Length: 100
Image (tube, rainbow, N blue to C red):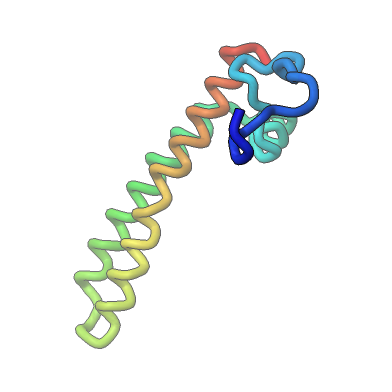
């Protein structure tokens, strides 16, 4: 082996107990699971955020031109939430299915 080649040191560690993929659950998922939240709670929240975004966008069209830019930015900001909220719900569902 050459001087600069990678050489593993120490014993190989196995998968953590109860982990299906070899990784520990993120702290946020563990907390949400212990509180009792389910994936469908987040899926409904994601759909609600879509409705809120549409509502804010429609409302932005009714305000005067001076305030319209800020109102549209607010609607776009809320429109970024649904994918993240949906994926948190998917992660909680996956955690439940794997039996952790």
